[in-house]
Image 1 (cartoon, helix red, strand yellow):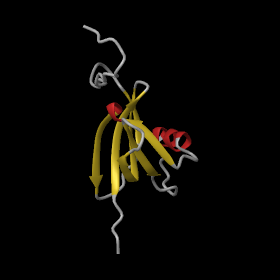
Image 2 (cartoon, rainbow, N blue to C red; image 1 turned 135 degrees about the vertical axis):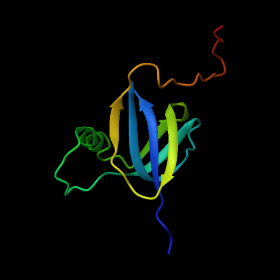
Image 3 (cartoon, rainbow, N blue to C red; image 1 turned 180 degrees about the vertical axis):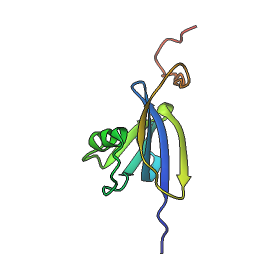
Image 4 (cartoon, rainbow, N blue to C red; image 1 turned 30 degrees about the vertical axis):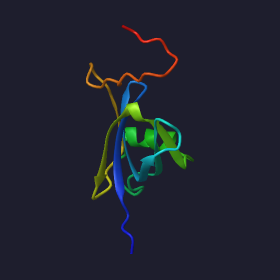
Length: 109
């Protein structure tokens, strides 16, 4: 019987850090993107609702596959158990996007 892998993907998007859990993560056929499939969310029976997880659920509602730019990825971990997804505000300069050179663009000095 095949084991089900669970991955924690942390990435930045529009000034916020997203932490999501998914069943499948791999390099996309689209150059420079990571493909994330089967996003997992916490139990629906829990009494305490986390507003950031509810926002994640609404944002990823109906999404079967997400393509995240590789330079936005902070970390990908294979974990034993699924946790709760969350969105956190970035305060200060703790997260910096890597500069990506695209052919045809003039280089900045």
